[in-house]
Structures are given as structure tokens and as C-alpha cells.
Amino acid sequence: MDFESSRWIWDGVYYHPHLLGGIMVTATLLGLSTSYFGGIGGSGFPYLLPDLKLFHKKRHEKKRVRVYMDGCFDLMHYGHANALRQARELGDELVVGVVSDEEIVDNKGPPVLSMEERLALVSGLKWVDEVIAAAPYAITEEFMNRLFYEHNIDYIIHGDDPCLLPDGTDAYALAKKVGRYKQIKRTEGVSSTDIVGRILSAYGDAKDSKDSGPSIQSDADHVTKTSTDKNDANGGHISHFLPTSRRIVQFSNGKGPGPNARVVYIDGAFDLFHAGHVEILRNARQQGDFLLVGIYGDQTVSELRGARFPLMNLHERSLSVLACRYVDEVIMGAPLVISKDVVTTFNISLVVHGSVSERNSFLDGKADPYEVPRSMGIFRMLESPKAITTTSVAQRIVANHEVYVKRNAKKKASENKYYSEKKYIAGD
Image 1 (cartoon, rainbow, N blue to C red):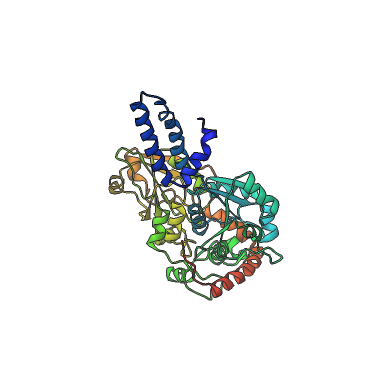
Image 2 (image 1 turned 120 degrees about the vertical axis):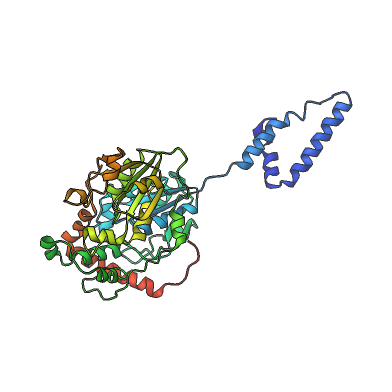
């Protein structure tokens, strides 16, 4: 009996498993009776075994669910990462569409990051399996069919916050209509609009920033304006970020290095996580078996860069780094100076540092924070693949100050409306 001709039998057994017991008992009795009566047809039961194997194989095979989520992913942050993490949990494989620069301009205004930079950021996330470049902003019928039939997508995912086209219609209306839409919970506390507001606030007026750089204020004033102040004179923001231990666990790999693992250590502020960070972390991970990332505390970053920094606080920066597929573990609030005790405690085999960074404090008359690993012969300078820094990204916004102020005013109004009308949504 070949498999095709007997498929109807095994499909019946698959959907009605109680039949299997009866079939097995009957087959066994037949085997016993035929052998008892002279072996007539005694070989019939063994021939069933190959089909049984196919049955078991078919029963255990499960279709892999592929889900799709799109976005601009401009000024990538932990909110984007958490959205993609949630989307990945709704399926077995996550395909991400990155909206083209042209469609972002038409629907939201000019993006801060280029398509290449946004692709690097999205591809660097641990939950992303595939990326579609230059995806459309709206899910058209043509593109939806491409997703279903070319990319084998089962469901299209979006957050609970509305995504409206310029004409006021729902960008995901078609996916909802055909019943292939699923919703996730929006991550509170951050958005690209919010980050642009932080940058504009930190750098002050565009004209002044060209001459004097970031404004310097007291640490207390910095903390207030980046967390709770509702009336920032520089057009600041209200932070809704409330860190929880569960969120850190969700982002963490939850595994330590093996007993013989080569642990590589890299440290920094990792403020306003960008494509340059992704590439240097990829490079660092290639130097060993386990990548440990030290993230400076807020006070350390403020001492290095000024009282209005970091733009993202320690918990926010830690989540962004943890979301990167090349990172195994982070030290939150890592010391600026790497001591022998740190090397011993974490069994560090190699300490690395990128050639491009915001500030190399050991180059401007201060103590070398890498003196100990240098003396131990375990320090290595890595060539940074991209010459991008937090400052260079921020300066793109400052250079187009008026454009982003207008864009933020429009987006901020919709965000304020969202928060004023927000209702509790289970999940996440």
C-alpha cells in the first residue's frame, strides 16, 4: 500500500486518534491468527510499519507561522524592538518591512536615518528573521497579495495605536477585512517623536548650537526635564517610560557564558542606539564566543558629555543594546575604568574598543580607562565599520531644526490624544 493511496486512512487517524488503538489491536490479532493458521498473509502487518512512520512524521510536522510587521523604524529605540519581539511571539518567523524614504516623506515628513541605516538597525534585532526593504507605508491589495503568496505570510501585525494615512483612512484596513490582522500592545514611554523632542531640547536653539554646542545645565535640571517636566521651555517632552524587571527579562538571552567561552567585553554610553553601534557590536562578537557589553551610568555619561546627556537613560539604553542579536549580556552602570577585578569577575578574555566614538577620555589628558587590560595584553582596538555617532545623528535634526519642530508639533498632538484616550490593553 503506497502512501498516497492510504493517505485518507492516516488523515482519518490523525483527526480521530482514538481509531489508532483499534487499528493496532486489529492488526496485531490478524498477525497472530494468520501465523497460527499456517502463516497465510503473515507478512501483511509488517508492511503497515512504513506507513505508521509516515503517520508519526505527519503528526509531528507543524506548519511554521510567518508573521509580518512593517514600520519606518526611524531613530530606532527599545519601543520598536519590543513591538517586534511581541510580533515574533505570534508566529515562528518574523518578516519585517522597512518603509522607503520616499513614502516616509509623503506620509510623515523627512526621516532622520537613511534606508541603509534603518535596515542595519532592524536586521540587527534578535527577533527578526527576514527584512523587506522599501515596503509601502499602506498595505495595498497588491502588496498584501505579495505578502500572502510570495512571502507566505499568515498574519499582518501592528500596535494598538492607530496608523492613519493622510486621508484619514486606516493603513491596515484591508488586512483586517480579510481576517489576517493581529494586534500587539504599544510600548509606553518612547517614540521617535519623543526622541526628536529630547534632541531639540538638549541642543537648544539651532543657531546657538552651531556655535556653542549642547547647552549645559545642572544635573538636577537635566533629570527633571527628561523625565517629568510638562513645560520644558525648549519644547521638551513628557517621558512615560516606567522600567520593569519583566521587560529586562524579556529582552535578555537568559544564558551566561560556557566554562571555556572566550568572553569579549566592550563598553560605552550607547546613547541614541544607531547603525554604528550595531556594526561595532557585530565586529566585537566575532572576536569570541560571548559578548558582554558595559553600559555607562547616566552620571558617567553626563560627566563625559555634559549635563543634558544622555538623551536616553540607563534603562532605555540597556534595552536597546540587549535587543541586538550580537549581544549576550550587559552590565548596567558599568565603570568607566576597567579594573583587574572586573576582568576576573566576568572572566574576560578580550577588551575591545571602536575607533569611532563620542569621546575617548584617555586621549585628552585623563587616565586611560583601558590601562589594566592593555597591561594584561588583552586590549584590542577595532576599526569601526561606520563613522556614525550619537552627535552626528543629532546634528541632522539640529541642521533641519524648523522642519522637525513642525513635524513634531503635528505628531505630538496625535500622541497626546492617544495618551488622553488610552485604555488598558492586556498582553505584552
